[in-house]
Length: 606
Ligand code: ADP
Ligand code: MG
Ligand code: ZN
Image (tube, rainbow, N blue to C red; front, side, top):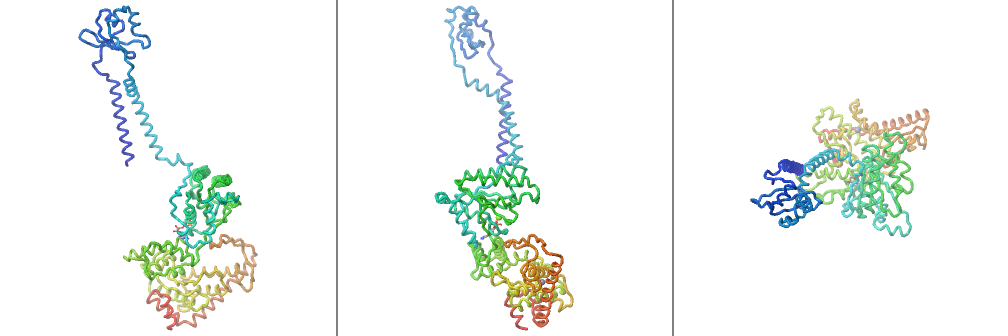
């Protein structure tokens, strides 16, 4: 707005000045003195009709004695005027009677004329300049596309510290060394220690990799340059490599500092796999990164930190010694980690006295730092909407469920009484079986209020994170998953499609028992299928079949056997405790939600 205005004003000013200049050039002042030739001047001098002569440059201004009029004559600049006049027949004594003055050529005057003559040119030039600027403005990016867009977080304002990253103690321990090096490089250099050049932060999204990288620079008090791997690839061909060059150049000038490359897998994936296309461009970018890293002398105090959640697809060249040879894992936090993250995020927020963060931490297995931050934020929003002064336990619990189940309660969807009946028995089935199985996690809550994609659910909470899992736990897990389906069958003699998620879970568990953990009786302790599983990602990337059709059939039979035996067990359990099933289901139909205590009360009452 402002810039626009001043540019417009500039244009108007130029137009006015140019118009004035043209006017002056065309209309010379009307009462200009008469022109006479030098011969006429000579004659006038002979006649004694000349009073004074002022010579300035090539102009000869003559004042005539007769009524004081002024006339102008022109002369040749480098010939003295007196000589010319004598040549024209004026006698020297006649010349002495005339007062001839020489004036220095008036600079000001000629400059002004020059300026006035140049103005139209300036005007045109200015116009071109403005037009050029305007076109440039619209595609500024295209003109500066080679420049790295690394943002500079200045080292004198480090905001994030290790204290802000909770629960990642091992990672912090490893990174402390990097901080020390950035702070006192000479100490390491004096001992000839090889300094790490690259640190790879590995872990699932939301575990605080970016946060950790910032904390390292914050602790060391050095600038932080960050760029995302996908930014390298997003523009024109050939730009990625030049961006890398720019980034490193800028960083070296500001050393000691940190270069953070987020999502490095976007550029650093296996070369030549043909996955993802445009690998020429990526390859060039990757090569440039490698070249720059190798070009670091031992005196360059720049440390590269990269983050990825797919270390398996990184090009081996990136992971070689002298490159990203340090690997720091940022895992999903365990109970105490979650507890610590929650405390970090409630700092400075009003919390009601009764709030038990320990319990919230136990209720959120699998949550990463970003989820937990989200929980606190949701709870704060809920508290504000309820016009409360502080965040209470109720808001926190609701936030956990909301984030854990994906979406707020869908109370608006009306259930038919028939549906409500089925869902109540289904969930009661899960809950009762869970209560009866020794190795199942305790029931925390049973509800038939639909949430996310689930029609209702039984919420169980592990007392601790399970690291080692026994065969009996797997069998109980499968049993609880079957509880819903079996309850429907026992009570209604019919089954609904509501159990599909349960069935998926229990099939997976049964298969894993046979193929992965060697827990089946007939197949023995063998692993079938090479699973490239990344523990911290919690998922199988690909399974390579390394067994015969015959074995495949055996596996299927074994899985079926496990599930069938669990099914029989659950049928027996629920038939024997059918009163408890009815009791819990009726309580659910009535109250919709049962807390741990209410459930226990109903369960033991019948
Ligand atoms: P990533 O880069 O691993 O995907 P981020 O660093 O972007 O994860 O984390 C997102 C947000 O989650 C952070 O800004 C922070 O608020 C929160 N967070 C994640 N991990 C932690 C942690 N260990 N301690 C405190 N906050 C965390
Ligand atoms: Mg990140
Ligand atoms: Zn179910």
